[in-house]
Amino acid sequence: MKAPKPLPMKQSNVDETVAQLRSEGLEVRGCACHVGDEAQRRQLVTNTLEAYGPSIDVLVSNAAVNPTAGPLLSTPLEAMDKILDINVKAALALLQAVAPHMPSGGSVVMVSSVTAYNPPFPIGFYAVSKTALLGLVKGLAAEMGAAGVRVNGVAPGIVPTKFSQALVADPALEQAQIEATSLKRLGTPEDIAGAVAFLASSDGAYVTGETLVVAGGMPSKL
Image (cartoon, rainbow, N blue to C red):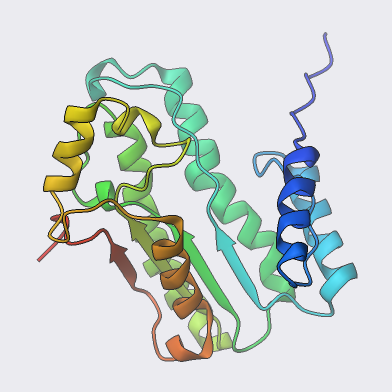
């Protein structure tokens, strides 16, 4: 039997980001972690506790993949497995590793998507995985509330990043995304970061079990 192929480690990307943040006067550290790998999840928790312990006050779960596009009825089983493994199972597995070290007053933020409310073609199964996070937030908030830990979600709209480039690669498609918003613009990473920071901070101390849609007014829910 062949040994499993090692999961890629992108420490160089982490180092570049850490260097940029430190140049802005921030005290940060970083390590590469493939959230689908149990050993790497454990190492991430260990590194965090060694650097900033004895507790972990905030967890933001933002890892996601989408290896396929097309109709739900023709989504390959292999793609389904990968999407669910990373977008849903790994999110919960990472929290399972962190939770024993999270004190009262801790905050968990799961990053979902506005598409979770109405999964669109051609990213239907990816969106369904984000729908699962809406339920995960509700269930975890109920479980962890008695320990004083809040669990919330953020559902971003379309933010032009490398991950979402297929949604804005064509000018006509990009304009359609813009027109679907009330603010007539796409989101920025800073827009989403602000919402995450609110939920993670004491400003959101009485908010739990909620998913905050940050989508410029794109249709999501009543």
